[in-house]
Image (cartoon, rainbow, N blue to C red; front, side, top):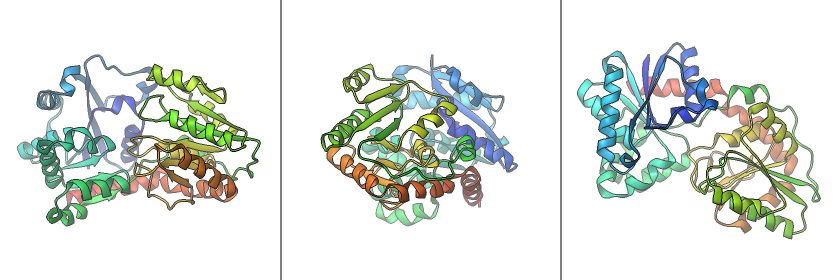
Length: 372
């Protein structure tokens, strides 16, 4: 099968490349068209995701973020300049609304079937406006398949945005497939769970970009509350700084340790030194970092209603939390402490649900079903 990816974020993430390489190994041919804002180049840490199968084009201006149609027409023009749709069997739009509009136009003009991924960002902003709500419905109605990265977002999208008389048809072509665990973490999955936690040594870890969306300040407040309950706790935050104001707020607390972006080998050692993983993101499409933490035996705390929620019942690999309630987060930390060894062991077992072969086989089946 010849597949073309339509992306806007390929140059800033590893997960698309991993999926792409997995499909290569199954015998598929995968090409990528990645559109970006002018001046938004490829950072050094992501250079390895770009090769001759990826075309990265900086083709729209910052103002085009709010000018929907001019931006999409620029993307479409550059896409057609670089690729002939008739050379492919399937187009995968990695955004449902904006890229999905382009995919729908290409299908109409060139009869190229397409599938769309529905991400957290698709469920915000434009889709809440009546005109774009109707566009979203058209995009999924004409799509040959719809991929959700989480059950939470699938339920939200179907129940909130799709008319009742269309839901059955939309559900028939919808699947939920999470992101795969990177091969490095598969090969370095720990063999044994961590030992029972003691109240005088609780080390909590957050791995994320430091910005308002990742909500790290709430993680800090939750650990502060835990300390007030008599625990000796520390929070380590690992990630690039995207919001200096957020960083300054976090730095005020003595129990917080901040480490800049770390390569996987160093990050593996950081996971080893910690006990619980906490990331109460306000918005999260999936959150592959949660399964990284699971592979290292760390029970996880993830946001209720966001990407990772509803994959497992509460208490199996950790707990869902209200990302705006430090008391709820603190209570869930205490629940993990009270049943630590069992949850840690479950994490090691369940992270294998996201091993690459499992996920790529599901995507392969999804593509084949979409074409049929």
